[in-house]
Image 1 (cartoon, rainbow, N blue to C red):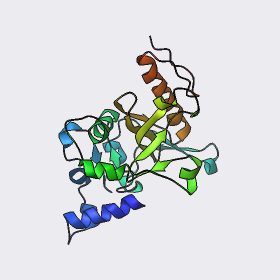
Image 2 (cartoon, helix red, strand yellow):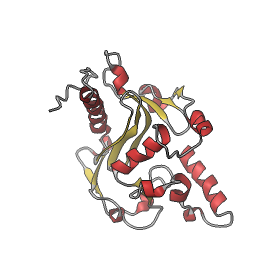
Image 3 (cartoon, rainbow, N blue to C red):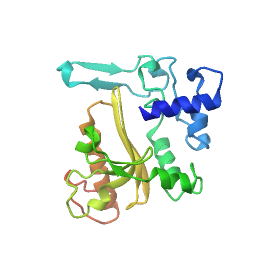
Length: 222
């Protein structure tokens, strides 16, 4: 993927005469790593259990009812620079706050961020089916399951989805709430994180005294 090609470029910059496996992606991606201390890139060595706090469950329609527990596999099964980060959801949310929110600690320049936000509709594959607008490493996403409903602006966020063996996630920055978030489910079935993200948006709206119908029910905060 494009992320893996980018990883090769970064590796060549860091170690012109070394191996791609010597890439230090933490150094390249996190200019202020102490703000997100749990985030780490496992590379290709060691079991996933060295970093996971809970196992995941991988599922696939071709497996029938079969499931695979994701915990002790080697980190080499992951996507190198495309899906190899492990950390707490709180620190992922911190990353998107610094990237997209009104944080005093910025990850990229305003010029770079403007380039990342040049969204275009995806025209092929799953992105076309899901009506995804993609920029440079960022998505403009409507989390509402009923995107035409009144109050759907509460379902909009900038960020990126995540999917790997045994886990799916949503993370980014919600302009309407002025809040960053990361939501992770320990299953490879994406519908759970999709519904949970939608309901989280409803909860954000309700916490501000607004009731919205995003197509995933109400969350009655008490």
